[in-house]
Length: 285
Image 1 (tube, rainbow, N blue to C red):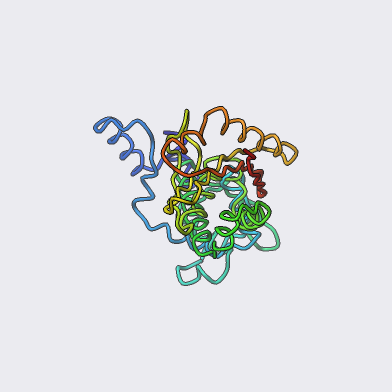
Image 2 (image 1 turned 90 degrees about the vertical axis):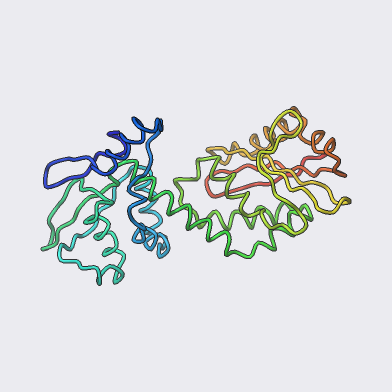
């Protein structure tokens, strides 16, 4: 509870979010819910965070990355800010987030007649709200991008074009998510949904396991298309990630499972991500 709902300051007094604490206790004791949740997210539209993410330039993305990774940022504080001033500058947005409880003070300094605060996200509840808004924004970026070029590259097996397209999209993401395989999985899945004449499925049982993503053809003469995803922390390890993906496809008999379902053939790709880079390679029969 401390990690999720503590961390707010009234003057120099640290307090918990009372609404979230009451909601958490009620859900845990009365309803038996075992895990915490972002109850504050249900009391507001969080439109200010949404607008900050929507308007983010490279610098704001860097700051969001630091915050979501439990880091800090420093901003000049204007205590006389009003709601009408919010969108006049990015600093005003940060100010409003501070005064509405989405940020907490770590330290402050006074310089050239201005007051500067070092701030961070107060707890995991608010961090989850930031992460949710960032994820929604990036999903929208993917949906609004013309994916026709990528789909054509997939259908023709052009791994170089697939790499170029995915890497260009990844450069727009927030770096904090770049170590999570679940982020890359969801990201690639969202780019593949809508591939003409194919139905996209995730983690469907095939062979002796569950391949990450499979495109199942609507036309009986077309092959199914399989993607197995790996993530590495350094670029030098990406080749090993591809080999691991290939080994998993073979050892768990994914292709045999798809053929047993009655499909005419399978084209399999190993995919490896590292930070904002991706490589695709076709598995040879």
